[in-house]
Length: 273
Image 1 (cartoon, rainbow, N blue to C red):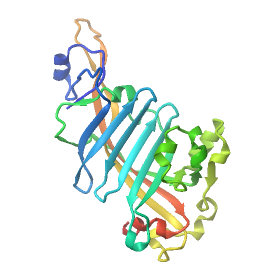
Image 2 (cartoon, one colour; image 1 turned 60 degrees about the vertical axis):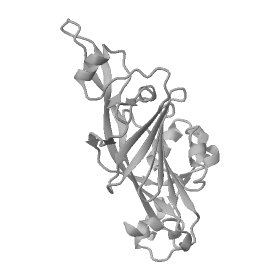
Image 3 (tube, rainbow, N blue to C red; image 1 turned 120 degrees about the horizontal axis):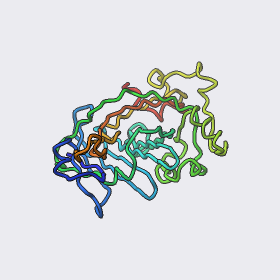
Image 4 (tube, rainbow, N blue to C red; image 1 turned 180 degrees about the horizontal axis):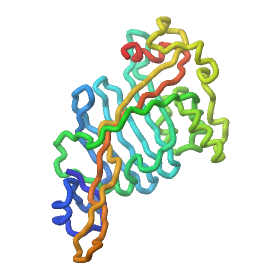
């Protein structure tokens, strides 16, 4: 069971009202480790951390194939970052691992605030968690590359998160337009070829030549994350009562990224899709 932050009535009352129990977390660390079941049936451990000072949340876990997924929500800049460290196929000439970063705008109410996340605690850490709500798959066409050396203008988290990705940092055209309107320097972005030459490129899984450019796809799913705060009403003897935070709602959400690569060698996993 989980705890959320609140200025609530008693914990005893709260325990009766909802399955997510409040546990006051003053002075404790902000790291939360949650056991979740992946779509392939394997169980993994998610590490969720909140930084109230930087107003951000991070989530990290390892997929069944060994790929390390990291997600960061930067509330100050309204930016979300996905990073994937994919084990390389050494026998096919790849490096030990390949890093990808995908950056987009963080929508309102996608995930709970960092200060609420920092106060979450589990009562039964060995239980395997299942999300209460399974959201639909989001398709994202990443049509622009992001310059790592200038990406601090979007978020201070990008340099540390994506330094290993170097030239594999991607974003969407719609997000680029939004950020340019906000005054972000256009030199951060580079439009990728498929925006103007899409008919000349095949999907990587349909391309046989390893050295031909193609459109790569990469999918991931955040199996469990706190997406919404729950509110309860106290019984204080009045008709209205008092509303207070009394727990969280958990969600699962999948993402499907499509982007240009200069050679299929950079997208070998797409052969299996």
